[in-house]
Image (cartoon, rainbow, N blue to C red; front, side, top):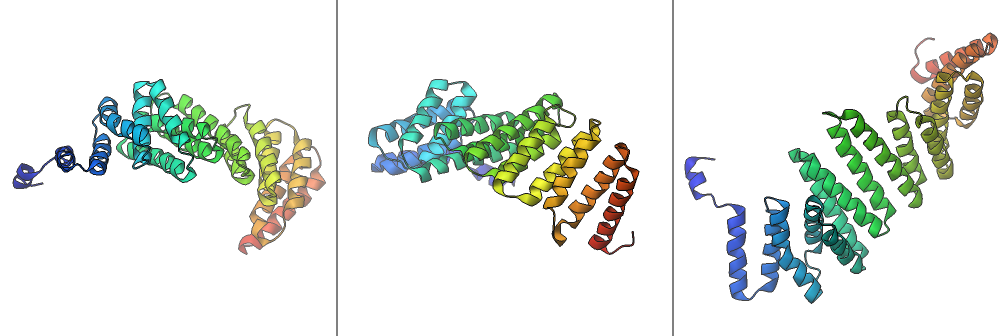
Length: 311
């Protein structure tokens, strides 16, 4: 911006205040309402945002108009969460629920997720988490398990970003817990395949955690419920790997045979090759060298079928 441009520059907030005054002078209540919503978005801190939002909220309550409810509710929920104003936050949630409009309720949730993205882009991860928890609480209040799952996955992403700094272990654990809870909400929403993906992702991120194997079992059940046989087979291979790591080769062998029984077709060649290679290791650990050689041969032949290279 040049010096001349800087001298001519008028802050957005000033322009909005002027517009509000003009609309008020004209008796245009809708114009005043929209300007006040825009001023709330331009607020410098949560207290200022709530102060700007009080007139639009009061107008919504007294007139029953839903104009701008998505922005008003989202901004009010974020500001109330930041200030610890639990009563106000609960009232705003009730206002959204009372609309009985699924479309409008989704718009409020989308506005909150949009705020999360904006805060994330500016690096304000504390505000990002506040918006995420506000979205989660609203989704729960609206009995919308799919929206609750979306909110939790976004919260998990916030924790992963924070995990790059101090207290990384605590944030990684929080991200894993969020994904597990999101998976359970997806099961409630009758989306078992997506739930299985989140359980599997959480199990992989848990590393050597004792919860890893149980999360793999939850992922397997979700995939089986979804009829996702290919994903269930891949999950069984992961479970077999955990059996091998804990010194239980015979359990690994049984699990791998179940996985292989579900794998067929050219698109599963890489997964089959991985399963046979793991089966060879399991058989060797179990003392069955002949079965180990047979499994190893199958793994090599499948590798040839996959990429055409010699064994």
